[in-house]
Length: 221
Image: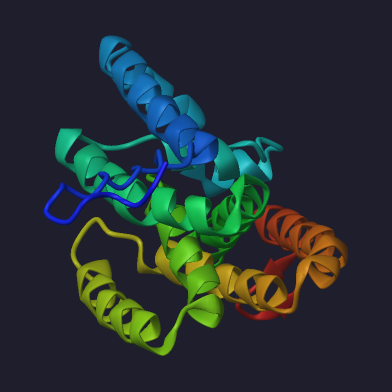
């Protein structure tokens, strides 16, 4: 079969299917599901799952993770899930589901640590701290143009973080924990395989120390 004749239409390019992003989609389904059940239960689920310092101090450490799935209203949910669709799915497609899951868990731990450290007695809900963790993880591995876009986005988030009802401490904590996650990704697969469990272990230890008030802004208790 020879080359196409002059004037004949070129073969259409084959469109590659978008990579499946199970972690990001799982977060979307979980957040929507929790929101629906919470609405039917007249907000009882939010009270049981949301991050709340005194409850964590009683041993309910799971709230550090489940609190990220709870949202205060439809607008809160829609705003955060739009970021999961735009940033989360793109990041997972770029770095792979396993590394994305590690960045997600690191962001959740950092968000909880920040919220408990700076505002222990306040209830904190929402996945925005995890989203900031993704931003922190993306920063070290992004291109120069990508970093410029991230800095613009971070400036916008920083302004929104000081609005009433928004936990700037959770945002800061998620971002701070996301940064080293991105650094070890940049160092390569072998370094990541060794350092990622250490990073998550340190995050878990900090959560326990802060949650049980053994570590406060004044130092070790």
